[in-house]
Image 1 (cartoon, rainbow, N blue to C red):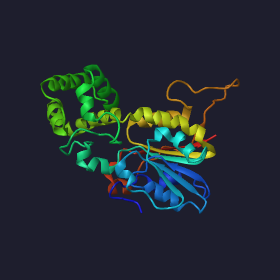
Image 2: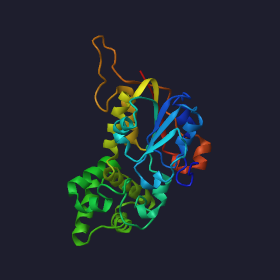
Image 3: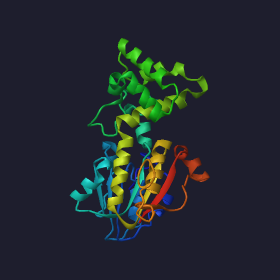
Length: 301
């Protein structure tokens, strides 16, 4: 049974339709969350079909589905190839990824993902490892902070914000969401405070969880894992993620021109299937958080 209170699956039918499920195939959902996409995939599999899911978040792991065809792997999807091999799986027929932060992570105030709640700055997907957001803002250099706010938050005044953070932490460490909000709010227009704060939080969260690096590592492994004719069905929520997904499906790489053979034919692992898909009016009305979702589908050549 899926936990819709944990996270309402976005583009559910469209993303699973895009996988072109074969009843006896082997599939992977690399962002299990509340189990919505996994449950839909399982509903289309026969008795011999198999589904593996990944999620590094301990809260998400509590939503595991009891089904003999299903295996939940408590790990980051950047290690997909390694963990599937441990399960005796060397190739799969399709992979689904929904790269958004779950509603549960935003709504559970103590996780520190949201500007709406006063809590310790944490933002780790896996709370057992890595550097939390509080440690990051209190230890990164001014140049490092400016770079990540610019690159991942796409905020032009990144140097001003970084300078303010460094000056403040000399006096007193920045430990909570309130500390960070109170410090940065004066820099933004009153009508756009929440928008800009959310962009700063996004930048810090991406760095804390190494989201861009993990996505690149994952994508490169998919071309080795997916069988000919198998599908990639990927949902992204901000331009940084979508750019990587789009370029990988189109070019097989993240920058530069695609490789070509002696005759000038492009050597790419996938071909694009259809156009980019976004939520329709009915879904947007039901789930406002789906508004920035973009689904892209690729088929292995």
